[in-house]
Image (cartoon, rainbow, N blue to C red):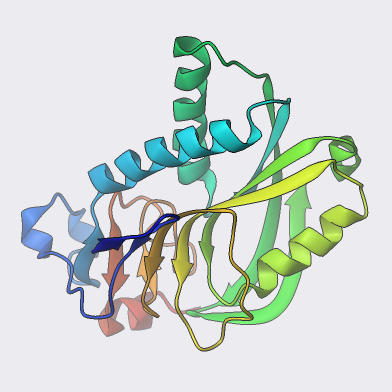
Length: 218
């Protein structure tokens, strides 16, 4: 792994870790290739992102917008670290939360067709500083569509934090403001990232194998 000024870059040659080195639920043991990003590393990187977000956006009330379902673990942990900064530093800001649910995947491919299948009244974002929290940026089409949608409500500022950004030839070139890890073009699951709703209950981020794809395909 390498670090850059904006993310931890995981190279294409990175093999990850043997499953036997970590606590993996038995019902997934035959469905995964390797542990790719251990849970502890995710949390440490998330804590650092919280500091960067507070430094960049901490002058005003923030509305944190969680993209469900895959973003909920990253969202919860990120907000816990931001709340800790609010408690333990001279700089403190109010933060409220809102939620939106999008659908863009069928099996392991991003379809490019974005369906908004949940969420609250986004008119409450008008004039606010909005932090969108997402689990992964794949092609970037989903996030660009969401950003266009939010423009209709005239927020004061919109920033995006994504735990993962995937290097893929399908990318439209979009890059979030805050990135945890940049990863190769592999389909990863765990830490609330799913494959057809499975694997959300896995703490680590892992690479799914062909057996897992076949077992849980839609």
